[in-house]
Image (cartoon, rainbow, N blue to C red; front, side):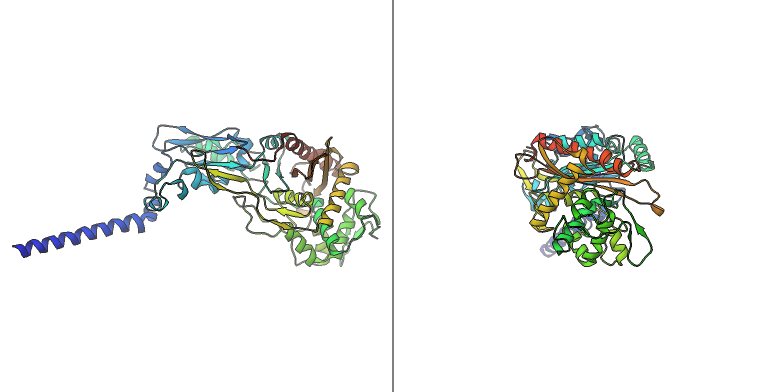
Length: 491
């Protein structure tokens, strides 16, 4: 009898071990498969059973959570939704997350390991804790100035602190309200269908996810390449440039809008935006040095995140001389995001150094203690300090005497560069209007803000596009930053 009891005990122990092993297999090995099964609603119920953490601008939450008393209990809410949608994105129970809501989802949803008291145990149990908050670098006054400046227009604005890379404004227009997408009912489905059917594509973040031909604003890069390569040594010596300029190896004639471009100096050519002079300079610099300078500014980088991904801005290196001439004035296949062109202006303002931009200052635990900090990213040199100093003077001349006069601000030093970019089959599309700029107070030691503005629906006249349309938007953003004293992140 004792032997039978012993055998039964061993058999029961084996069954218990098998049961435990099978439970571990299901909970650990097969858990992802069960989590991903559409029939399993437990992950969704757990995800929305508590309020989501908030995204803060200037110390104020621009997001919230609403208790619906349903199975998916808490639904995302947004304050000033269209104003901040290009930053927050949306958090939808049906359609997932985008932009900051996606990039910082582990903090906001409470799954980040450091939000748990015992991180290793949290990894095993996959428990959720109360979500943390995300503190952005945005200057609310600059963001609102950019948004209001684009009211009724189609385009984008990006503004940076040149000395750190902090993003002060990021606006895309037309925008949208992410609030109707938050739930899981018929209203969310209708809002999703309407937004996706809109020909103006309001959910496209034009500031970071769309690239445009930068037009004459790219002449900042070409000028930097020419100065650093020694092709240009004196800004006030005639360049022996014809008008029109015949593209090398072709019969195509490149002309100018201004009458001041034949044999113009670099200073005159920059002030009056002479295509012929800068196309010729790009050819003289050569494709390799032009591509290297563009890369130093941030072109052809595949991995820029802020923390959500930024589209790649491009400058081709395999070009014949005619293509190089057009690329050097921001046409042909040269493409840039507004954020990239703000980086170009920031490099000029920051003595030739460019900081990679970032949007999150820090993340915090629910009690307010810091979870992680971002801080300024390492800088790289886009051009020599002496070249940057000469480009600052050129950009100031554009605002004082050239095509960017409407960007001038009383009590501040302002530099800028206008641009008109042709596009479409046979350049038949309405030209894009660009303006890139930087500003610092008269009594300040460093530039406070660099801005890039692009308008997709500007008028066709070059002078009115660059000076009358895009530049006032940039000026409003610069004035907002100078007045707000935006140096420190929000609390």
